[in-house]
Image (cartoon, rainbow, N blue to C red; front, side, top):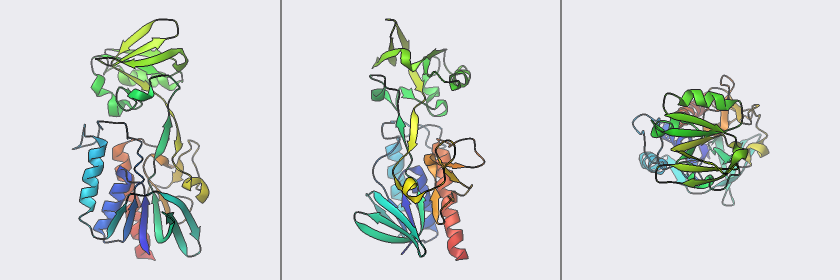
Length: 277
């Protein structure tokens, strides 16, 4: 019987494992090896780690967790989580494991606009977060490939950073190619734009089927509804990181720092529930 099983080995899951390990709670961390930041070479806006490769962040996190004997890490994906009167069961590699709590840190999947060449530069010169990737284009032109009302907000956010912010509707872009200094956007009218980088607004969905099979309550955004400590609508199940949205926030916070904070808070809540029980 585990005190907690964490599903997801990104920043939120790693922090939850570290916090539980420091409290000597028997914990299993399941890491499928699939990450939203899989194509990102440099992660920014994280204190003491600004610009570090996300893969290196995960390596360091695992090394730190290895110091705590109560935490087990498996490179495997959970296929099912079931809640019954006696608690929670997690199925992994055909094995059914019992646990007091489950912390979901599986993240989300992005669906980029269907523009040829765009995906090849995703996480590098194509991004969606100006806080995480804006400064790297400082003093150079950038494109906002976005036809939604939020494009105007991105323009105002990027104006102090970029030399010029160009707004282009995704439907007007024929293809994207890499250049020595950034990107070339080939437009349907035959013209092209040379920019340092482009910001897009991908559609996203919660990763995996566990959220649906558990019947977790969702926010209007599609994220899992939680309280400030990551508790979901199913007792003993917590959600942290990109897939979670507490009621007090207008949407999910796609941020490394927020994911780490969420992982720690959920782990604290798990310990508190174990003590109460």
